[in-house]
Each structure stands twice: as structure tokens, then as C-alpha cells.
Image (cartoon, rainbow, N blue to C red):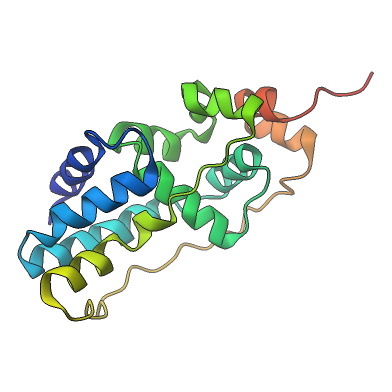
Length: 178
């Protein structure tokens, strides 16, 4: 499955899902399960590439600010939610995590405390393969390596958050005391 096909399937799943990550995931499973098992394997590889491309320190910092914390699993689930936002939002967030401050739902979360979790999106290929074949998705023989995150910063350091992610920090970090 090519990158364009991967994102087209997600866009199709997003249509009518009401913006809810679990609904997008359920629709994606249904759509993918109708395809040939080779397409499902291709989707799984593309998803792994997308997740690997988004495994970035500053995006993790953005997830941490937005969700009020993000463990390694929490960061995975956040990126699952980010996938449900579509290719353009995803690509922009990977290139510039601070751009997430432009999303109305993220801006609203600064007041409501809503957290963004798309855990169900991460299991789409496995669920679709099981539904289509009644067997488990075969292990990928050529897994995509996870990048090294050696540029970590203290996500609780408000000054560093303001420096690295100024728009998000303006929404989610308390103003400095004078």
C-alpha cells in the first residue's frame, strides 16, 4: 500500500466519524477488512512508517503539554489520535509540533482538559486482518527501526517549553510569576 492510499483510507474512515478517534478506528478496520490481506499488510507497514516518522522529541513535548503528561505509551496513543486528524494535520505537526496550537479542538482542550488518545488506531491493521482472515497478522520481517531520541528535554521545564513550543505553552503552561 502506498502512502497516498494509506491516508485516503484514513480520510474515508474519518468521513462521518464525528471526529472521534475510536469511531475513525472502527471505520478504518471495517474498510480495511474488505480489502485483500496483502493490502492490510501494506497498511500495517505504512502505519509503522508514519509512527516512526512522528517519533520526535518536540512532538512528544507537545503531547505532554496538551495531555498534561505523556508516558511512552501515552505518546503512542497521542500519535494514534494525530493520525485520525488526517495527513495534512499529521505532516504539519511532525514538521512543527507547535502548529497543533492552531487546531480548534486543541485550543478548546486548554480550557476543558480534554486529552487526545487514539489507542484504537494503533490496532487497526491487526483487527482488520483478524476480521478478514480469522488469523493473526503475520509479524513484519522488515520492521522499521525506531529513531534514537537523544535530544530529550525536561517537559516539566516551563521556560524550555515556552522556548521550544511557544504557541502551545501559551495555551497550556501557567504564565510566569512576576
